[in-house]
Length: 125
Image 1 (cartoon, rainbow, N blue to C red):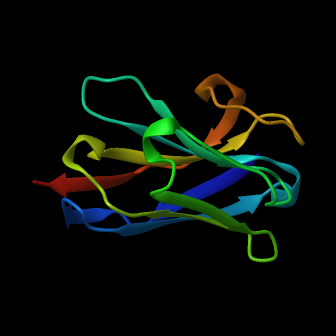
Image 2 (cartoon, rainbow, N blue to C red):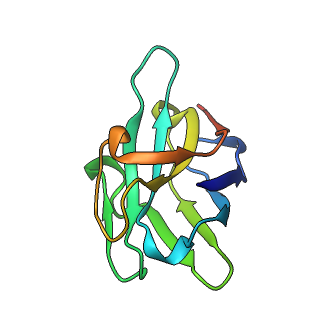
Image 3 (cartoon, rainbow, N blue to C red):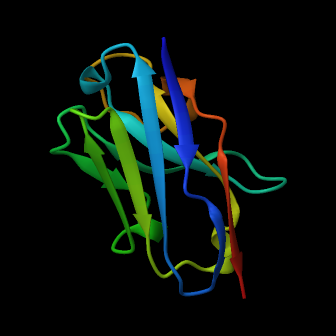
C-alpha cells in the first residue's frame, strides 16, 4: 500500500497558475506510474495527466496539454502538477493516484489502487 497526500490547491483567478504536490509513503514509489485526476461537482472523475515510473514518460488529456506539466522526484517520493492558464471549467477536486500494478501506464481510475484525499482547486472568472 502507498499513502498519498496532496497539497497546493486553492483559489485562483482565470488565467492564473497553481502548483499541486503529492507526497507518497509506503511501497516502492519509483516502480509505479503516478497520475492526477479531477472531479467536478456532479461529474465523473476524469484523467488529467500521468507520469511513468522513471519520470521519462508523460501523457496529458487533450484539454490541458501545453498548459499543465507533471513531474516527479523519486528520491523524495513526490510528484507535482504545474497548472497554468487555468479556466473556471477546471474547478474541481484534484486527486493524485498510484497505479495498481508496477511498470504499467493507465488513464482510467480503475487502474489506480491508491488515492490521496484530494485538494480543491477553484478558478474564479
